[in-house]
Length: 281
Ligand SMILES: O=P(O)(O)OC[C@H]1O[C@H](OP(=O)(O)OP(=O)(O)O)[C@H](O)[C@@H]1O
Image (cartoon, rainbow, N blue to C red):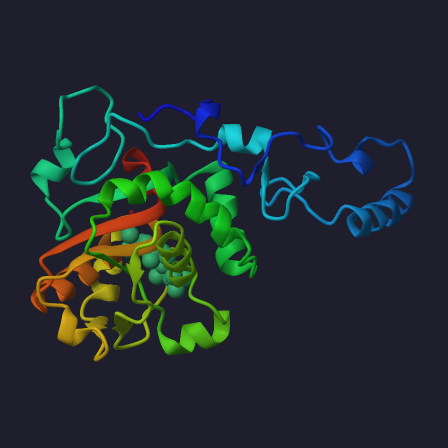
């Protein structure tokens, strides 16, 4: 498995190095609950920034506290060259996992920053479902190492699209925010509408593996804006989470069928391969 992040050498500036308290101040006071709630409201007004994982007060907006940061499981070498999943043992340069050998994906390489558990799940939940779009910065910063490995001078970042109906409901595409942040920070071209959904799909969450594949089958197409440039393109697909890979594999198939030379995948988090069945079986 990838090393758990205790490596402070990889501490991005969006992590709060000096949390203001070790537990919510009001939780530690021996006052009646209503008083504590009132005090917390007051504190929130004076110190408006809190850790997006545990709500601990922090000094910078969108920064996680150090203790949450240390429980994120960053993916580091050794990992599968093809799937980006952590390997239990060092197998040499460019080694493929058994899963990749048995069932090679339709994309070329995937890379993720963290395993999807604990604080990573909470970050994605708040980013995607609670409207906390400020988290795009933190997540994108976490993705920069993985992005740097994938990106070449002619790479084009393309986010996994939402259907227009879901976009209207959510009001933003979380993957587009990530693609824009990463692209801007690494000075890489991004095309936020490179793909679109041809039909509304159910959310993958809660579906079994086969149902996930069927759910996204034929659901993507290359946009008219990107179509003239897709031939020979070096695409890096961007998404928030990779679980079974059904979504990004379908996108990769469409892009390659349209002439893309290469399709890599960049996500914030991927589900631990040993735990995919918990989400999809
Ligand atoms: O690897 P997979 O098994 O395909 O699962 C991952 C996909 O599922 C989630 O999206 P979902 O379709 O649930 O919906 P949303 O992005 O519209 O919320 C997630 O954002 C990925 O796109």
